[in-house]
Amino acid sequence: MLGTNPTASGVQIIVCIALTALVGLATWLKIRRAKHDGSSKDVFLAGGGLSWLFVAGSITLTNLSTDQLVGMNGNQMLLLAWWEICGFFGLLILAFVFVPIYYRNNCTTVTELLEKRYGGRSIRTLISALFLFGNILIYLPAALYSGGLFMQSLFGSTMPILFFAGILAVISAAYTIFGGLRAVAVMDTYSGIGILGLAVLIVILALAAVDWDIVSDVPMERLSMIGGPDSPIPFHTLFTGMIFIQIFYWSTNQNITQRAMAAPTVKEAQKGVMAAAIVRILIVPPIVVIPGVVAYKLFGDIGDAAYGRLVAEVLPAWLSGAFAAMVAAAVITTFSAVLNSSVALYSVDFHEQFIGEVNDHWKLAAAVSVLLTVVAIMLVPLYQNAESIINLLQQLNGLLSMPILSAFVAGLLFRNVAAPAAIGGVIWGVLLYGLYTFRLEPAGIITMHYIDFMVVTLATSVIAALLTNRIILGNRAEFFLSPKAAA
Image (tube, rainbow, N blue to C red; front, side):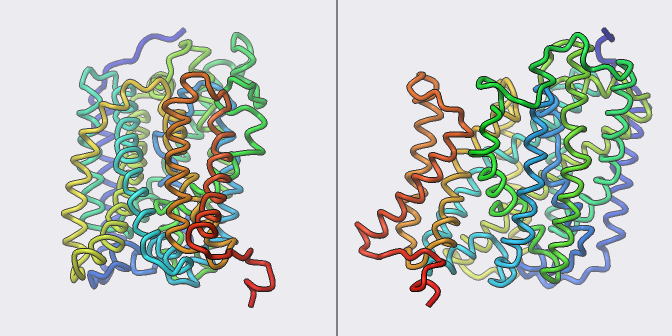
């Protein structure tokens, strides 16, 4: 077994700061000649000018942050690779089903599609509020926590996680405030090339450190891709709730789809999404699970500290500093991306509708970004008591993901469904999954795995919407393939 983490060396720190600054400089040089008009499209969709390369880079790095590198490797089992493998199929659905729909409806936010499908603004407001709730309370602080934990583990520092999280948050907010989605997408792509290359190198060096043997002295349940009933991903759930989780995350989640909506054409957006899908299936799975298993063999069960400790051990000081810079960039771009999406939702779906027209979205974005950043930093300590950050996130996501997806399912698959009916289905889903998560499952009343229960939540939410539409509102929904709906 290898020793404990070394303390941060001057070389590590200098390399980390230098490369972080270099990525920032390269990003500025790329975007500095861009013209700005202060419109929502300018700030939140990069003026509709992202090429396929930057769409792919932004989608990849918005998702691939320390939530994955730290959280998935923190489980220290190969099984968690299923999240990324199944993500490939989620991206295919985004490319060929949802991208054409979003472009046909000229959407800035995914919630605009709901308003147009239901013919009512109320459902758009509710879904936007739920997205904001999830971003503020889940995605933003979780990104800072996992990034701060990684930095603390890598540098062997006695500084608290909140110190590192604060630094990452400030830099992230600066990208959103001064560069908008254009800066975020460009930085995503530049840092993505580095982080994927170094992540693959870490896999190779980690395997070399154990003589390419991750089988001996490692329990079989940590090596099997067939999850048992008590595992994080029971095998049967790949055929139940997993696909719906992927559809929600990749196709209806503002944080991801906003990047796909920022290309000049549907074909350019589809090329970018497909490129991201190829990276997702070929590169991402091994880098998010193999280091964790190797860390188990070297250090034992150390949870979310596994990845940072392994990197500190297998990389020379100057390279670990480089990797710290790349991971910092991944955290910064993920936080910036979610922050930009949150500001977009507030500006377009709330401020313009309930307060007044926005003449300069840059100024409003700056003010809202500062507020949300402060809140995210304050919430970081809540995540420090989580046994596994990635499993916690997936469970909390169920509170929002399936209820929100039900609004898309009811709106896209049925005609003549009123917005209040969709709202009834969403409320039902949030209450049902909340009851399951915080009462029924902990008490042993329902023993169903949370991925399975997501299917129950989705199906009953759609049924609740259709029943509300028929019984309370007196409308008869028509399936979109029926002759009446087609007419």
